[in-house]
Length: 126
Length: 497
Image 1 (cartoon, rainbow over the protein chains, first blue to last red):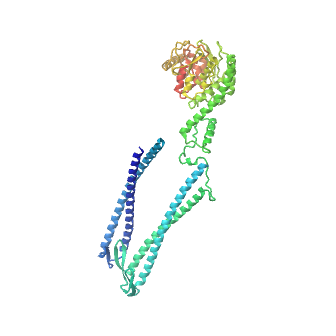
Image 2: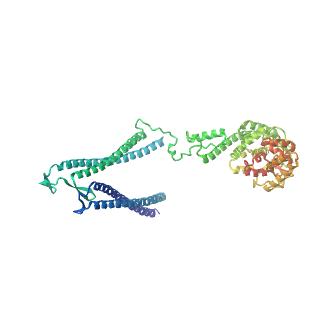
Protein backbone atom coordinates (compact mmCIF):
# COMPACT_ATOMS: atom_id res chain seq x y z
CA UNK A 1 0.00 0.00 0.00
CA UNK A 2 2.70 2.39 0.97
CA UNK A 3 4.76 1.47 -2.02
CA UNK A 4 1.96 2.14 -4.41
CA UNK A 5 1.47 5.50 -2.86
CA UNK A 6 5.15 6.13 -3.06
CA UNK A 7 5.13 5.43 -6.77
CA UNK A 8 2.22 7.68 -7.26
CA UNK A 9 3.94 10.33 -5.28
CA UNK A 10 7.05 10.09 -7.40
CA UNK A 11 5.10 10.35 -10.60
CA UNK A 12 3.28 13.35 -9.31
CA UNK A 13 6.47 14.98 -8.17
CA UNK A 14 7.97 14.55 -11.62
CA UNK A 15 4.97 16.06 -13.24
CA UNK A 16 5.11 18.92 -10.86
CA UNK A 17 8.79 19.59 -11.50
CA UNK A 18 8.09 19.53 -15.21
CA UNK A 19 5.38 22.07 -14.73
CA UNK A 20 7.66 24.23 -12.69
CA UNK A 21 10.24 24.13 -15.44
CA UNK A 22 7.69 25.21 -17.98
CA UNK A 23 6.68 28.01 -15.76
CA UNK A 24 10.21 29.22 -15.31
CA UNK A 25 10.84 28.99 -19.07
CA UNK A 26 7.86 31.10 -19.84
CA UNK A 27 8.91 33.53 -17.19
CA UNK A 28 12.37 33.99 -18.63
CA UNK A 29 11.00 34.34 -22.15
CA UNK A 30 8.68 36.99 -20.94
CA UNK A 31 11.49 38.84 -19.27
CA UNK A 32 13.50 38.81 -22.48
CA UNK A 33 10.58 40.20 -24.33
CA UNK A 34 10.29 42.94 -21.80
CA UNK A 35 13.88 44.05 -22.25
CA UNK A 36 13.41 43.98 -25.99
CA UNK A 37 10.37 46.08 -25.60
CA UNK A 38 12.27 48.69 -23.63
CA UNK A 39 15.06 48.71 -26.15
CA UNK A 40 12.81 49.09 -29.09
CA UNK A 41 11.10 51.94 -27.42
CA UNK A 42 14.38 53.73 -27.08
CA UNK A 43 15.26 53.02 -30.69
CA UNK A 44 11.98 54.41 -31.79
CA UNK A 45 12.46 57.55 -29.85
CA UNK A 46 15.98 58.01 -31.11
CA UNK A 47 14.91 57.46 -34.66
CA UNK A 48 12.40 60.20 -34.12
CA UNK A 49 15.23 62.45 -33.08
CA UNK A 50 17.03 61.89 -36.40
CA UNK A 51 16.06 63.33 -39.71
CA UNK A 52 16.35 62.05 -43.25
CA UNK A 53 19.84 63.31 -43.76
CA UNK A 54 21.17 60.58 -41.57
CA UNK A 55 21.48 57.13 -43.05
CA UNK A 56 20.20 54.31 -41.00
CA UNK A 57 21.73 50.91 -41.08
CA UNK A 58 20.54 47.63 -39.93
CA UNK A 59 22.96 44.97 -38.79
CA UNK A 60 22.09 41.73 -40.45
CA UNK A 61 24.77 39.31 -39.47
CA UNK A 62 28.12 40.87 -40.20
CA UNK A 63 26.62 43.27 -42.70
CA UNK A 64 25.36 46.76 -42.13
CA UNK A 65 22.51 47.25 -44.51
CA UNK A 66 21.35 50.66 -45.39
CA UNK A 67 17.79 51.39 -44.44
CA UNK A 68 15.42 54.18 -45.03
CA UNK A 69 14.60 56.19 -42.00
CA UNK A 70 10.90 55.84 -42.49
CA UNK A 71 11.26 52.19 -43.23
CA UNK A 72 13.30 51.82 -40.14
CA UNK A 73 10.72 53.62 -38.11
CA UNK A 74 7.95 51.46 -39.49
CA UNK A 75 9.94 48.32 -38.87
CA UNK A 76 10.65 49.28 -35.36
CA UNK A 77 7.03 50.10 -34.69
CA UNK A 78 5.95 46.78 -36.07
CA UNK A 79 8.48 45.02 -33.97
CA UNK A 80 7.23 46.83 -30.94
CA UNK A 81 3.71 45.69 -31.57
CA UNK A 82 4.86 42.17 -32.13
CA UNK A 83 6.72 42.18 -28.89
CA UNK A 84 3.69 43.46 -27.06
CA UNK A 85 1.56 40.71 -28.45
CA UNK A 86 4.12 38.13 -27.50
CA UNK A 87 4.20 39.41 -23.99
CA UNK A 88 0.45 39.10 -23.71
CA UNK A 89 0.54 35.58 -24.99
CA UNK A 90 3.21 34.62 -22.54
CA UNK A 91 1.30 36.16 -19.71
CA UNK A 92 -1.76 34.08 -20.34
CA UNK A 93 0.38 31.02 -20.73
CA UNK A 94 2.04 31.75 -17.46
CA UNK A 95 -1.28 32.09 -15.69
CA UNK A 96 -2.48 28.77 -16.98
CA UNK A 97 0.72 27.13 -15.96
CA UNK A 98 0.44 28.62 -12.53
CA UNK A 99 -3.04 27.28 -12.08
CA UNK A 100 -2.01 23.87 -13.20
CA UNK A 101 0.95 23.86 -10.92
CA UNK A 102 -1.30 24.83 -8.03
CA UNK A 103 -3.56 21.94 -8.71
CA UNK A 104 -0.61 19.70 -8.93
CA UNK A 105 0.67 21.04 -5.69
CA UNK A 106 -2.56 20.19 -3.96
CA UNK A 107 -2.56 16.72 -5.38
CA UNK A 108 0.98 16.32 -4.26
CA UNK A 109 0.28 17.41 -0.74
CA UNK A 110 -2.69 15.10 -0.42
CA UNK A 111 -0.64 12.25 -1.74
CA UNK A 112 2.09 13.10 0.67
CA UNK A 113 -0.33 12.98 3.52
CA UNK A 114 -1.59 9.63 2.39
CA UNK A 115 1.89 8.40 2.11
CA UNK A 116 2.74 9.56 5.56
CA UNK A 117 -0.32 7.94 6.92
CA UNK A 118 0.54 4.74 5.19
CA UNK A 119 4.03 5.01 6.51
CA UNK A 120 2.71 5.54 9.96
CA UNK A 121 0.48 2.53 9.62
CA UNK A 122 3.33 0.44 8.32
CA UNK A 123 5.50 1.56 11.17
CA UNK A 124 2.70 0.79 13.58
CA UNK A 125 2.23 -2.62 12.10
CA UNK A 126 5.88 -3.37 12.26
CA UNK B 1 5.12 30.59 29.30
CA UNK B 2 6.44 27.72 27.29
CA UNK B 3 3.89 28.51 24.69
CA UNK B 4 4.96 32.05 24.59
CA UNK B 5 8.54 30.98 24.25
CA UNK B 6 7.63 28.63 21.51
CA UNK B 7 5.65 31.25 19.75
CA UNK B 8 8.49 33.60 20.18
CA UNK B 9 10.84 31.19 18.57
CA UNK B 10 8.52 30.66 15.66
CA UNK B 11 7.97 34.31 15.37
CA UNK B 12 11.65 34.87 15.51
CA UNK B 13 12.29 32.39 12.75
CA UNK B 14 9.77 34.02 10.55
CA UNK B 15 11.15 37.38 11.30
CA UNK B 16 14.66 36.30 10.58
CA UNK B 17 13.63 34.84 7.29
CA UNK B 18 11.74 37.96 6.41
CA UNK B 19 14.77 40.02 7.17
CA UNK B 20 16.90 37.82 5.01
CA UNK B 21 14.53 38.16 2.12
CA UNK B 22 14.46 41.88 2.48
CA UNK B 23 18.21 41.99 2.51
CA UNK B 24 18.35 39.97 -0.66
CA UNK B 25 16.16 42.42 -2.44
CA UNK B 26 18.21 45.29 -1.16
CA UNK B 27 21.40 43.73 -2.38
CA UNK B 28 19.94 43.11 -5.77
CA UNK B 29 18.81 46.66 -6.05
CA UNK B 30 22.19 47.90 -5.00
CA UNK B 31 23.96 45.90 -7.66
CA UNK B 32 21.66 47.22 -10.29
CA UNK B 33 22.22 50.72 -9.12
CA UNK B 34 25.94 50.17 -9.45
CA UNK B 35 25.46 48.97 -12.97
CA UNK B 36 23.42 51.91 -13.94
CA UNK B 37 25.83 54.26 -12.35
CA UNK B 38 28.57 52.82 -14.45
CA UNK B 39 26.51 53.18 -17.57
CA UNK B 40 25.76 56.71 -16.67
CA UNK B 41 29.45 57.42 -16.23
CA UNK B 42 30.17 55.93 -19.58
CA UNK B 43 27.61 58.09 -21.25
CA UNK B 44 29.01 61.14 -19.60
CA UNK B 45 32.40 60.37 -20.99
CA UNK B 46 30.90 59.74 -24.39
CA UNK B 47 29.20 63.05 -24.28
CA UNK B 48 32.40 64.79 -23.57
CA UNK B 49 34.13 62.99 -26.38
CA UNK B 50 31.43 63.89 -28.84
CA UNK B 51 31.74 67.49 -27.83
CA UNK B 52 35.39 67.70 -28.48
CA UNK B 53 35.56 65.40 -31.47
CA UNK B 54 34.53 67.88 -34.20
CA UNK B 55 37.07 70.39 -32.92
CA UNK B 56 39.67 69.00 -35.27
CA UNK B 57 39.36 67.71 -38.79
CA UNK B 58 41.47 64.69 -38.03
CA UNK B 59 43.26 63.15 -35.16
CA UNK B 60 46.45 61.08 -35.00
CA UNK B 61 45.64 58.13 -32.92
CA UNK B 62 46.87 54.67 -32.17
CA UNK B 63 44.38 52.42 -33.76
CA UNK B 64 43.81 49.11 -32.00
CA UNK B 65 44.67 46.22 -34.26
CA UNK B 66 43.23 43.15 -32.85
CA UNK B 67 43.24 42.50 -29.17
CA UNK B 68 46.93 43.07 -28.64
CA UNK B 69 48.28 45.46 -31.24
CA UNK B 70 47.95 49.06 -32.03
CA UNK B 71 48.79 50.95 -35.10
CA UNK B 72 49.24 54.60 -35.63
CA UNK B 73 46.51 56.07 -37.69
CA UNK B 74 44.28 59.04 -38.29
CA UNK B 75 40.77 59.66 -37.20
CA UNK B 76 38.88 61.40 -39.96
CA UNK B 77 35.34 62.56 -40.52
CA UNK B 78 35.19 63.58 -37.00
CA UNK B 79 31.66 64.76 -37.25
CA UNK B 80 30.27 61.53 -38.64
CA UNK B 81 29.18 59.11 -36.06
CA UNK B 82 27.42 55.83 -36.55
CA UNK B 83 25.34 55.31 -33.52
CA UNK B 84 23.89 52.04 -32.39
CA UNK B 85 20.31 52.72 -31.65
CA UNK B 86 19.60 49.34 -30.18
CA UNK B 87 18.30 46.08 -31.48
CA UNK B 88 20.79 45.95 -34.36
CA UNK B 89 19.80 49.35 -35.69
CA UNK B 90 22.42 51.86 -36.63
CA UNK B 91 22.18 55.41 -37.66
CA UNK B 92 24.73 57.64 -39.19
CA UNK B 93 24.54 61.01 -37.70
CA UNK B 94 26.54 64.03 -36.86
CA UNK B 95 28.23 64.47 -33.58
CA UNK B 96 25.58 66.77 -32.33
CA UNK B 97 22.84 64.40 -33.25
CA UNK B 98 24.78 61.69 -31.55
CA UNK B 99 24.91 63.86 -28.53
CA UNK B 100 21.18 64.20 -28.62
CA UNK B 101 20.86 60.47 -28.74
CA UNK B 102 23.21 60.15 -25.85
CA UNK B 103 21.23 62.65 -23.84
CA UNK B 104 18.12 60.75 -24.52
CA UNK B 105 19.73 57.60 -23.31
CA UNK B 106 20.96 59.30 -20.26
CA UNK B 107 17.44 60.22 -19.42
CA UNK B 108 16.45 56.60 -19.54
CA UNK B 109 19.32 55.55 -17.38
CA UNK B 110 18.53 58.19 -14.85
CA UNK B 111 14.92 57.12 -14.61
CA UNK B 112 16.01 53.56 -14.01
CA UNK B 113 18.36 54.67 -11.33
CA UNK B 114 15.63 56.60 -9.61
CA UNK B 115 13.34 53.63 -9.51
CA UNK B 116 16.00 51.45 -8.10
CA UNK B 117 16.96 53.88 -5.40
CA UNK B 118 13.33 54.18 -4.37
CA UNK B 119 13.05 50.44 -4.07
CA UNK B 120 16.19 50.29 -2.05
CA UNK B 121 14.94 52.91 0.35
CA UNK B 122 11.69 51.04 0.76
CA UNK B 123 13.32 47.79 1.52
CA UNK B 124 15.87 49.34 3.79
CA UNK B 125 13.05 50.72 5.88
CA UNK B 126 11.43 47.32 5.97
CA UNK B 127 14.66 45.73 6.98
CA UNK B 128 14.97 48.17 9.83
CA UNK B 129 11.46 47.33 10.99
CA UNK B 130 12.13 43.66 10.79
CA UNK B 131 15.31 44.11 12.76
CA UNK B 132 13.42 45.86 15.48
CA UNK B 133 10.80 43.17 15.45
CA UNK B 134 13.48 40.60 15.74
CA UNK B 135 14.99 42.21 18.75
CA UNK B 136 11.60 42.62 20.32
CA UNK B 137 10.55 39.07 19.80
CA UNK B 138 13.80 37.81 21.13
CA UNK B 139 13.44 40.24 23.99
CA UNK B 140 16.89 41.53 23.51
CA UNK B 141 16.23 45.16 22.87
CA UNK B 142 14.80 47.87 24.98
CA UNK B 143 11.41 47.49 23.48
CA UNK B 144 9.29 44.67 24.70
CA UNK B 145 6.41 43.28 22.83
CA UNK B 146 3.50 43.48 25.19
CA UNK B 147 1.66 40.26 25.16
CA UNK B 148 -1.03 38.85 27.31
CA UNK B 149 -1.00 35.20 28.05
CA UNK B 150 -4.58 34.60 27.23
CA UNK B 151 -4.28 32.21 24.40
CA UNK B 152 -3.31 34.96 22.06
CA UNK B 153 -2.44 32.55 19.37
CA UNK B 154 -6.06 31.66 19.08
CA UNK B 155 -7.24 35.14 18.53
CA UNK B 156 -6.96 35.09 14.82
CA UNK B 157 -8.69 31.80 14.63
CA UNK B 158 -11.33 32.12 17.25
CA UNK B 159 -11.71 35.79 17.27
CA UNK B 160 -15.40 35.66 17.50
CA UNK B 161 -15.66 32.72 19.78
CA UNK B 162 -14.10 33.84 22.94
CA UNK B 163 -16.90 36.03 23.94
CA UNK B 164 -19.88 34.97 25.89
CA UNK B 165 -23.25 35.48 24.48
CA UNK B 166 -25.40 37.01 27.13
CA UNK B 167 -28.90 35.97 26.56
CA UNK B 168 -31.31 38.80 27.07
CA UNK B 169 -33.57 36.62 29.15
CA UNK B 170 -30.91 35.19 31.32
CA UNK B 171 -31.01 36.18 34.91
CA UNK B 172 -28.28 38.39 36.21
CA UNK B 173 -27.45 36.04 38.98
CA UNK B 174 -26.95 33.14 36.72
CA UNK B 175 -25.21 35.29 34.21
CA UNK B 176 -22.73 36.30 36.78
CA UNK B 177 -22.12 32.69 37.55
CA UNK B 178 -21.69 31.92 33.92
CA UNK B 179 -19.38 34.81 33.44
CA UNK B 180 -17.24 33.60 36.21
CA UNK B 181 -17.04 30.23 34.72
CA UNK B 182 -16.30 31.49 31.28
CA UNK B 183 -13.92 34.03 32.64
CA UNK B 184 -11.81 31.29 34.02
CA UNK B 185 -11.42 29.86 30.61
CA UNK B 186 -10.72 33.06 28.80
CA UNK B 187 -9.12 35.50 31.04
CA UNK B 188 -10.45 38.86 30.40
CA UNK B 189 -12.27 37.93 27.31
CA UNK B 190 -15.18 36.13 28.82
CA UNK B 191 -17.04 39.14 29.93
CA UNK B 192 -17.48 40.76 26.60
CA UNK B 193 -20.63 40.87 24.62
CA UNK B 194 -21.58 37.69 23.02
CA UNK B 195 -20.43 36.73 19.67
CA UNK B 196 -20.19 33.09 20.51
CA UNK B 197 -23.92 33.02 20.42
CA UNK B 198 -24.94 29.55 19.57
CA UNK B 199 -22.63 27.47 21.65
CA UNK B 200 -22.46 29.83 24.59
CA UNK B 201 -26.20 29.87 24.91
CA UNK B 202 -26.22 26.14 25.33
CA UNK B 203 -23.26 26.25 27.59
CA UNK B 204 -24.96 28.92 29.58
CA UNK B 205 -27.99 26.79 29.94
CA UNK B 206 -26.08 23.79 30.98
CA UNK B 207 -24.10 25.80 33.44
CA UNK B 208 -27.28 27.11 34.90
CA UNK B 209 -28.68 23.64 35.02
CA UNK B 210 -25.68 22.49 36.90
CA UNK B 211 -25.99 25.33 39.30
CA UNK B 212 -29.57 24.63 40.02
CA UNK B 213 -28.89 20.98 40.34
CA UNK B 214 -26.32 21.69 42.94
CA UNK B 215 -28.73 23.83 44.82
CA UNK B 216 -31.33 21.21 44.60
CA UNK B 217 -28.93 18.60 45.76
CA UNK B 218 -28.18 20.60 48.81
CA UNK B 219 -31.80 20.97 49.54
CA UNK B 220 -32.50 17.40 48.84
CA UNK B 221 -29.79 16.46 51.20
CA UNK B 222 -31.59 18.31 53.86
CA UNK B 223 -34.81 16.80 52.75
CA UNK B 224 -33.42 13.42 52.88
CA UNK B 225 -32.13 13.97 56.31
CA UNK B 226 -35.44 15.16 57.47
CA UNK B 227 -37.16 12.47 55.51
CA UNK B 228 -35.13 9.75 57.01
CA UNK B 229 -35.57 11.22 60.37
CA UNK B 230 -39.26 11.47 60.01
CA UNK B 231 -39.87 8.43 58.01
CA UNK B 232 -40.81 6.41 60.93
CA UNK B 233 -42.59 9.18 62.64
CA UNK B 234 -45.68 11.04 61.86
CA UNK B 235 -46.26 11.84 58.30
CA UNK B 236 -47.97 15.07 58.49
CA UNK B 237 -45.94 16.69 61.10
CA UNK B 238 -42.75 15.52 59.65
CA UNK B 239 -43.87 16.48 56.28
CA UNK B 240 -44.81 19.87 57.34
CA UNK B 241 -41.67 20.32 59.25
CA UNK B 242 -39.80 19.12 56.29
CA UNK B 243 -41.65 21.59 54.24
CA UNK B 244 -40.63 24.23 56.60
CA UNK B 245 -37.11 23.17 56.30
CA UNK B 246 -37.43 23.14 52.63
CA UNK B 247 -39.00 26.48 52.78
CA UNK B 248 -36.05 27.82 54.58
CA UNK B 249 -33.65 26.28 52.25
CA UNK B 250 -35.41 26.97 49.06
CA UNK B 251 -33.93 29.80 47.13
CA UNK B 252 -36.35 32.55 46.63
CA UNK B 253 -34.93 33.37 43.32
CA UNK B 254 -37.09 31.26 41.21
CA UNK B 255 -40.17 32.06 43.10
CA UNK B 256 -42.53 33.89 40.90
CA UNK B 257 -40.47 34.28 37.87
CA UNK B 258 -40.45 30.69 36.98
CA UNK B 259 -42.62 31.08 34.03
CA UNK B 260 -40.45 33.20 31.81
CA UNK B 261 -37.55 30.95 32.18
CA UNK B 262 -39.52 27.85 32.07
CA UNK B 263 -38.73 26.92 28.55
CA UNK B 264 -35.13 27.77 28.87
CA UNK B 265 -34.44 25.57 31.79
CA UNK B 266 -37.47 23.63 32.65
CA UNK B 267 -35.91 20.87 34.51
CA UNK B 268 -33.51 22.86 36.46
CA UNK B 269 -36.28 25.02 37.68
CA UNK B 270 -38.26 22.09 38.81
CA UNK B 271 -36.35 21.28 41.92
CA UNK B 272 -36.19 24.80 43.19
CA UNK B 273 -39.75 25.33 42.29
CA UNK B 274 -40.70 22.21 44.06
CA UNK B 275 -38.83 23.39 47.03
CA UNK B 276 -40.55 26.62 46.87
CA UNK B 277 -43.79 24.90 46.60
CA UNK B 278 -42.99 23.02 49.70
CA UNK B 279 -42.06 26.25 51.24
CA UNK B 280 -45.42 27.61 50.53
CA UNK B 281 -47.19 24.67 51.87
CA UNK B 282 -49.03 25.14 54.96
CA UNK B 283 -49.25 22.77 57.68
CA UNK B 284 -52.88 22.52 57.30
CA UNK B 285 -54.08 19.11 57.91
CA UNK B 286 -55.55 17.02 55.25
CA UNK B 287 -59.17 16.53 54.90
CA UNK B 288 -60.53 13.15 55.19
CA UNK B 289 -57.15 11.47 54.99
CA UNK B 290 -53.90 11.53 56.73
CA UNK B 291 -52.15 13.46 54.01
CA UNK B 292 -51.36 17.11 54.38
CA UNK B 293 -53.00 19.68 52.33
CA UNK B 294 -51.07 21.66 49.93
CA UNK B 295 -51.55 25.31 49.75
CA UNK B 296 -49.77 27.57 47.45
CA UNK B 297 -49.44 31.15 48.35
CA UNK B 298 -48.93 32.22 44.84
CA UNK B 299 -52.43 31.28 44.00
CA UNK B 300 -55.04 33.67 45.13
CA UNK B 301 -57.39 31.11 46.33
CA UNK B 302 -56.66 27.68 47.47
CA UNK B 303 -58.30 25.27 45.26
CA UNK B 304 -59.84 22.10 46.20
CA UNK B 305 -58.19 19.45 44.39
CA UNK B 306 -59.39 16.01 44.12
CA UNK B 307 -56.49 13.76 44.02
CA UNK B 308 -57.12 10.45 42.60
CA UNK B 309 -56.06 8.46 45.52
CA UNK B 310 -58.72 5.95 45.08
CA UNK B 311 -60.52 7.18 48.08
CA UNK B 312 -62.09 10.14 46.46
CA UNK B 313 -60.26 12.31 48.78
CA UNK B 314 -60.14 15.91 48.11
CA UNK B 315 -57.20 18.04 48.56
CA UNK B 316 -56.76 21.64 48.36
CA UNK B 317 -54.27 22.09 45.79
CA UNK B 318 -53.21 24.67 43.39
CA UNK B 319 -50.08 24.46 41.53
CA UNK B 320 -48.33 26.54 39.11
CA UNK B 321 -45.94 24.13 37.73
CA UNK B 322 -46.47 20.55 37.01
CA UNK B 323 -43.01 19.74 38.17
CA UNK B 324 -43.73 21.05 41.56
CA UNK B 325 -46.71 18.90 41.84
CA UNK B 326 -44.89 15.97 40.51
CA UNK B 327 -42.00 16.28 42.82
CA UNK B 328 -44.38 16.86 45.62
CA UNK B 329 -46.23 13.74 44.80
CA UNK B 330 -43.10 11.89 44.52
CA UNK B 331 -42.07 13.15 47.84
CA UNK B 332 -45.27 11.99 49.30
CA UNK B 333 -44.93 8.69 47.64
CA UNK B 334 -41.46 8.43 48.80
CA UNK B 335 -42.67 9.40 52.14
CA UNK B 336 -44.88 6.45 52.17
CA UNK B 337 -42.71 3.86 50.76
CA UNK B 338 -39.51 4.89 52.26
CA UNK B 339 -37.81 5.98 49.11
CA UNK B 340 -36.00 9.19 48.92
CA UNK B 341 -37.13 10.83 45.83
CA UNK B 342 -34.93 13.76 45.89
CA UNK B 343 -32.92 12.24 43.15
CA UNK B 344 -35.96 12.00 41.04
CA UNK B 345 -36.49 15.66 41.21
CA UNK B 346 -33.23 16.24 39.55
CA UNK B 347 -33.99 16.08 35.91
CA UNK B 348 -31.01 16.27 33.72
CA UNK B 349 -31.84 13.75 31.10
CA UNK B 350 -35.02 12.40 29.65
CA UNK B 351 -34.41 9.30 31.65
CA UNK B 352 -35.04 11.27 34.76
CA UNK B 353 -38.40 12.21 33.52
CA UNK B 354 -39.28 8.64 33.02
CA UNK B 355 -38.13 7.93 36.47
CA UNK B 356 -40.55 10.46 37.76
CA UNK B 357 -43.39 8.85 36.02
CA UNK B 358 -43.62 5.83 38.15
CA UNK B 359 -46.77 4.23 39.21
CA UNK B 360 -46.70 3.41 42.81
CA UNK B 361 -48.60 0.26 43.28
CA UNK B 362 -48.77 -1.22 46.65
CA UNK B 363 -45.86 0.73 47.76
CA UNK B 364 -43.60 -0.28 44.94
CA UNK B 365 -42.65 2.08 42.24
CA UNK B 366 -43.51 0.56 38.96
CA UNK B 367 -42.16 2.41 35.98
CA UNK B 368 -44.79 3.36 33.57
CA UNK B 369 -44.57 2.01 30.10
CA UNK B 370 -45.31 5.25 28.46
CA UNK B 371 -45.44 8.59 30.02
CA UNK B 372 -47.65 9.84 27.31
CA UNK B 373 -50.40 7.49 28.15
CA UNK B 374 -52.43 7.73 31.23
CA UNK B 375 -52.67 4.97 33.64
CA UNK B 376 -54.95 2.13 33.05
CA UNK B 377 -58.51 2.57 33.76
CA UNK B 378 -59.04 -0.46 35.82
CA UNK B 379 -57.09 1.04 38.56
CA UNK B 380 -59.04 4.14 38.51
CA UNK B 381 -61.30 4.75 41.36
CA UNK B 382 -62.30 8.17 40.43
CA UNK B 383 -65.49 8.72 38.74
CA UNK B 384 -64.31 10.56 35.78
CA UNK B 385 -61.35 8.56 34.85
CA UNK B 386 -62.17 7.32 31.45
CA UNK B 387 -60.13 9.40 29.09
CA UNK B 388 -56.66 8.48 28.48
CA UNK B 389 -55.54 10.17 25.36
CA UNK B 390 -55.09 13.57 23.99
CA UNK B 391 -58.11 13.12 21.89
CA UNK B 392 -60.18 12.99 24.92
CA UNK B 393 -58.48 16.09 25.92
CA UNK B 394 -60.52 17.87 23.37
CA UNK B 395 -63.61 16.30 24.71
CA UNK B 396 -62.85 17.62 28.06
CA UNK B 397 -62.33 20.97 26.60
CA UNK B 398 -65.73 20.78 25.12
CA UNK B 399 -67.11 19.70 28.40
CA UNK B 400 -65.36 22.44 30.10
CA UNK B 401 -66.67 24.85 27.63
CA UNK B 402 -70.17 23.69 28.05
CA UNK B 403 -69.74 23.99 31.71
CA UNK B 404 -68.50 27.44 31.45
CA UNK B 405 -71.28 28.43 29.23
CA UNK B 406 -73.64 27.75 31.98
CA UNK B 407 -72.32 30.66 33.75
CA UNK B 408 -74.56 33.30 32.36
CA UNK B 409 -73.25 36.33 34.02
CA UNK B 410 -69.69 35.89 33.03
CA UNK B 411 -70.07 33.84 29.99
CA UNK B 412 -67.75 35.89 27.86
CA UNK B 413 -64.95 36.02 30.24
CA UNK B 414 -65.43 32.49 31.20
CA UNK B 415 -65.33 31.53 27.59
CA UNK B 416 -62.04 33.10 27.24
CA UNK B 417 -60.98 31.46 30.33
CA UNK B 418 -62.34 28.13 29.41
CA UNK B 419 -60.35 28.21 26.32
CA UNK B 420 -57.38 28.75 28.40
CA UNK B 421 -58.50 26.41 31.01
CA UNK B 422 -59.65 23.69 28.76
CA UNK B 423 -56.14 22.57 28.13
CA UNK B 424 -56.00 21.99 31.75
CA UNK B 425 -58.78 19.53 31.49
CA UNK B 426 -56.64 16.56 31.87
CA UNK B 427 -58.23 13.21 32.17
CA UNK B 428 -58.00 11.68 35.50
CA UNK B 429 -55.95 8.71 36.07
CA UNK B 430 -58.05 5.84 37.04
CA UNK B 431 -55.57 4.15 39.15
CA UNK B 432 -56.31 2.19 42.12
CA UNK B 433 -54.42 4.41 44.31
CA UNK B 434 -54.22 3.34 47.76
CA UNK B 435 -51.32 5.49 48.38
CA UNK B 436 -51.55 8.95 49.51
CA UNK B 437 -51.16 10.66 46.26
CA UNK B 438 -51.77 9.11 42.95
CA UNK B 439 -50.47 11.96 41.05
CA UNK B 440 -53.75 12.99 39.62
CA UNK B 441 -55.07 16.22 40.66
CA UNK B 442 -58.51 17.42 39.98
CA UNK B 443 -59.07 20.98 40.62
CA UNK B 444 -62.41 22.03 41.68
CA UNK B 445 -63.67 25.42 42.45
CA UNK B 446 -66.98 27.11 42.60
CA UNK B 447 -67.38 29.10 39.46
CA UNK B 448 -68.54 32.45 40.79
CA UNK B 449 -65.71 32.85 43.14
CA UNK B 450 -63.29 32.08 40.42
CA UNK B 451 -64.64 34.52 37.93
CA UNK B 452 -63.45 37.65 39.63
CA UNK B 453 -60.05 36.18 39.49
CA UNK B 454 -60.15 36.11 35.80
CA UNK B 455 -58.76 39.51 35.51
CA UNK B 456 -56.14 38.82 38.02
CA UNK B 457 -52.78 37.44 37.25
CA UNK B 458 -52.42 34.04 35.70
CA UNK B 459 -52.33 32.09 38.89
CA UNK B 460 -55.93 32.85 39.28
CA UNK B 461 -56.92 31.36 36.02
CA UNK B 462 -57.02 27.78 37.04
CA UNK B 463 -59.55 28.48 39.66
CA UNK B 464 -62.29 29.39 37.32
CA UNK B 465 -62.75 26.33 35.32
CA UNK B 466 -62.17 23.84 38.04
CA UNK B 467 -65.54 24.15 39.47
CA UNK B 468 -67.14 23.36 36.25
CA UNK B 469 -64.92 20.55 35.49
CA UNK B 470 -65.73 18.12 38.14
CA UNK B 471 -64.65 15.23 36.14
CA UNK B 472 -61.70 16.90 34.76
CA UNK B 473 -58.38 17.04 36.30
CA UNK B 474 -56.91 20.25 35.25
CA UNK B 475 -53.57 19.51 36.38
CA UNK B 476 -51.35 22.34 35.88
CA UNK B 477 -53.06 25.52 35.09
CA UNK B 478 -50.14 27.79 35.03
CA UNK B 479 -48.34 25.96 32.37
CA UNK B 480 -51.41 26.02 30.31
CA UNK B 481 -51.96 29.64 30.88
CA UNK B 482 -49.05 30.36 28.78
CA UNK B 483 -49.26 27.56 26.32
CA UNK B 484 -46.52 28.99 24.36
CA UNK B 485 -44.16 28.50 27.18
CA UNK B 486 -45.22 25.01 27.96
CA UNK B 487 -43.66 22.29 26.04
CA UNK B 488 -45.97 19.75 24.62
CA UNK B 489 -44.00 17.30 26.57
CA UNK B 490 -45.28 18.84 29.68
CA UNK B 491 -48.72 19.04 28.27
CA UNK B 492 -48.63 15.37 27.64
CA UNK B 493 -47.54 14.86 31.15
CA UNK B 494 -50.35 16.99 32.28
CA UNK B 495 -52.73 14.67 30.65
CA UNK B 496 -51.21 11.80 32.42
CA UNK B 497 -51.67 13.46 35.69
